[in-house]
Image 1 (cartoon, rainbow, N blue to C red):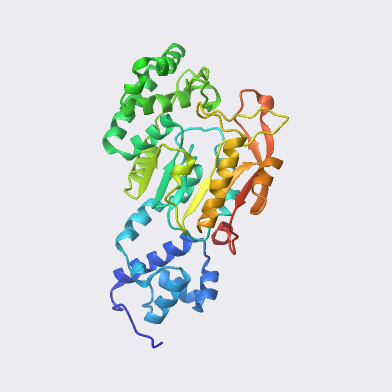
Image 2 (cartoon, rainbow, N blue to C red):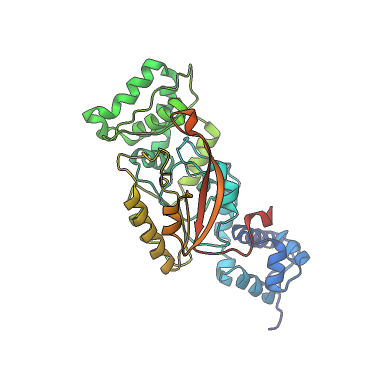
Amino acid sequence: MHSHVIMVVGDNMILTTFGDRIKYLREKQNIPQSKLAKTTGIVREQISRIENGQINPTLETVFRLSEALNITMSELFDFDVVGQQQEISNLSLKPFVKWAGGKTQILPEILKMIPNSFNTYFEPFLGGGALLFQLKPINAVLSDYNSELITAYNCFKDADSFKLMVNEILNHQMNHSEEYYYQIREMDKLPEFSNLPNHMRAARMIYLNKSCFNGLYRVNSKGYFNVPSGKYASVNAFDEILYNNLSKYLSLQSISIINDDFQKAVASAKKGDFVYFDPPYDTFDEKKNFTTYTKNAFGKDEQKRLANVFKDLDSRGVKVMLSNHNTEFIRDLYNQFNIKVINARRSINSVSSGRGNVEEVIITNYTLENTYDDIN
């Protein structure tokens, strides 16, 4: 193949934008410069200069980069999305609620096992969204069976609902007291609760999460929130910078937020997509564990159904990761896949004796050549 110059040398803006695009795609796939150099046959120093907009790459160089990054040459020059991707990648995001089973503490272990590349991101047991807010994918399908939680996410997504929700949260914050907490907590028992506007339900959920005991979300068999007060003199339920960042990210048109069963939530996943399952965990036989996120218990039969969905996705070429407790039952369900055992600390429990170190597993249907650590 003959080498042809493809961009005007003096156009620094084009070179800089192209370099930013290469760097974004490389880092999104967790590929260090040294790995990309080996794959393409382009020396690392040259790749660094391309990413910094310092040299004008030839057509042959661009072709090699597109092949290594598994993207067409036309997509490589899709500069319209570069600014958006850069803006999103610079946002500081984290969960807006404390959620039982949240993944913040074991994120470093999970990030080591994220696929090198993927198209659409699916997370059917969204919860607090710790992994989502670390990865910040542009294309995502997000779901949870907890309708109150998803109502809150959707209020972040819609600009008008977001403003109304914030005002309502500030109102709760200002009126907070022990008596007020229980007054708001009892609202879901009223016949008219289901007819409340979404922004009011979302603000209530966030306020209760910030002011209840130990940040625990729990409902009884009738679906009523029943966690006692945390007995705080005051609560801070509104983080202006974080909430504005969350609204900016979740309002992307390419992000879908639904309230559905996990099997339906991943029905559209196809080859090249990535699904992360973080279900209510299997219980250790000798211990009682918290699994009541909704009024529908997630028992052994649901774990089996989830395993069947995992296997179906695998057969369709979808990349799948799942977290759970390290129990014999779970290991048997996924014995043909890759199972990594890690230590985690359970920090949410109604009694302190129920907290402590436990073994968890991270299960994948793929292997990695390089890890998140390689680019850090």
